[in-house]
Image (tube, rainbow, N blue to C red; front, side, top):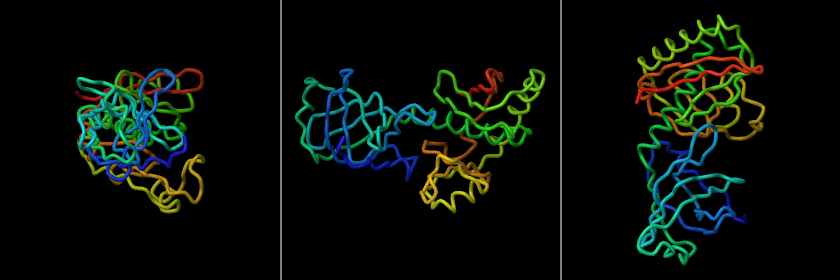
Length: 256
C-alpha cells in the first residue's frame, strides 16, 4: 500500500481516547471486511500481546459513522476494520480523501486491555524479584480470555508451586505500593540505560524505541497501552505455572 506510515497518537499519549485525523483511503479486504486508512490514529492495533481497541470513527460534516471492530497494522500502516452505521450502510463508500474524522475509542475495553497488559509487565519484574531472572522472556498473551507470560527455560514441579505463591505475593505488594507508569520514545543510548544497559537484539542500534517504566523499576521496550499507576491494576492472582517443551508459562487474572 502506497501510504506513509500512520502516526500513532497513543504512542505519545497512551491515556488519550479521542483524536482528530484525515481520511486517506477505503478498501474491501479479501475477507469482505471494509478497512479505513487514516493519516493518524488513537486506536491501538492488535499486537505485542494486546488486542485491538474498538470504537467509532465519525466523519465531520456528514452522516457517515464507522464502527471500528478490529484494528491491525501492516508495514507501518494501521487498518481500521468495521462497518458503516445508519440507515444507509453504504453511505460512507463515497467519502473524499482528506476529509476530517473524529476518532473515539471504547473506554472500558481500552482500560481492561491496559490493565491486563500492564499486569504482564509487572510479572516480568516479579520474576526477577523471586529469583527467576535467569529465565529468558518469551512471549506474552494478554487477551481477556487467557492472559499469560512465557519464559524460556524449565523449573521442577515443586519449585513451580512455591514460586507461584511468591510471584502472586510480590505482584500484589507492588500493586499496593503503586507507582507512576511512563512510556516515552527515546534515543537508543538513553533507552538502553533505562532498560538496565541492555536492549533486545530486535531493537536496531541508532533507533528511537518506545520505553515503558513501571514506577522506578527498570524499563523495557513496549508499544502498547498501560495504566497510569501500578495501583490501577487493583490486584492480581497467579492461577497457574507450568513447564512444557522447554518453556515456563505463568497464567494470571486481575480483579474485575
